[in-house]
Length: 202
Image (cartoon, rainbow, N blue to C red):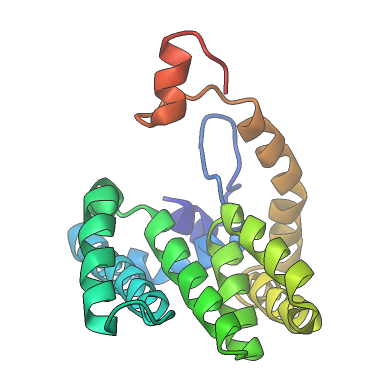
């Protein structure tokens, strides 16, 4: 829906439309709107799972405790159990996590440019990835300017796809969206929702 709103030049952050992402995310979703909903959804879910699986495979190759194939099998069994719901609903969390794992694997191998691109793309798709990005640039200063450049590319991309004043309005609305989400009650089916049900504010 956000991608459709982007095409139509409608605001991404109106009241009661919970698009909890940055504008580049709507741009990246845009190709899925060119296909029938079911087909686009199936392709997106397949891509989502593939990126997550690739990230799991790459990060499982780090370390020396077991053969790589065993580590990937163990990691896959655990992550499939934990991520089945996100895969079914096509949550961006999976592709974000896959990109974060790939960035981590590339940092371990000192592939600074690839790590910067993957970390920046994860943030462009979902704001939560900023936690890993900030950690990486603090621990590995080599990433700092590369990450800034990668972020600039991804965050300037929307200006190539829509009118500049429209894109600027969406970016100016982001702080309000983030503030609204910070005060949004946890009503979803996860651990914080459970805490809220029993009266414990997370």
